[in-house]
Length: 360
Picture (cartoon, rainbow, N blue to C red):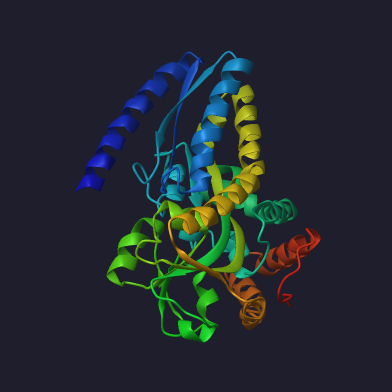
């Protein structure tokens, strides 16, 4: 009932802002943009950077560099669109600008989740974002898909910091995870195959209650969100595994809305969008460190998976990149090209995999 009321309130705000936008656009003076995300700002770094960096920076630069003014109606935490609704909300114009994880669009953005398909990659988020950007630059299809298929412009990439594993119960060896139900976003659930754990697809907003009630007993999660969503309360055991940082989030804008704006405003949106991307690695690394420190401070029971066990886990997934590449190829996507480009890009950063992947 609360969610329904929130969305009703959001709809009133949207209608009001739309009317306002129509009136002021005619004066070519003040433009109102609706921006949102399914996750809340604070625990989700990509949303915090939207709220704290992108929105104020666009407003400041438009005011300083043009004759126009930009106003934002902001809706985070699913108040306008949920985590699995944001791409469609931007496409349909419910949101003008949306930030979301590609992991919640497993069909439409299957190949955009490519970092998930080669786990145990860069532990450093800046290094991960560097590799991800290199793949987008080398494979224009990834960017063009947003415009051609979903009528939106990709303004910038973002991601998640290094993934680890939290559980309700302690475990000592990978074999102890056999049969344990573990939640995850979807594209990362195959990581559990080697351990014999039972994958359960879920979302961050559902995590706390699901861990508390035994829907699952573990969660694949980076420390910034594990701390922010207080998952350490129902699941206090947190093991640093190092599945890697993942550049799988994006900030997109409705293409028709973007094209309706003056060129000088478009230029600022593009430049600030790239700034949003460029600071992603730094923001995520800071949250990784703060998350680990915070979990230790609140009394989470923390340990690090031995390197030999980690290497064995990575080796067990040696065929995963090729399998996902062929799956994408079969969907009419350049899967083999993208996965090869990604592995090359990661190698180009100087990162050393615990097990070297290759794609045939």
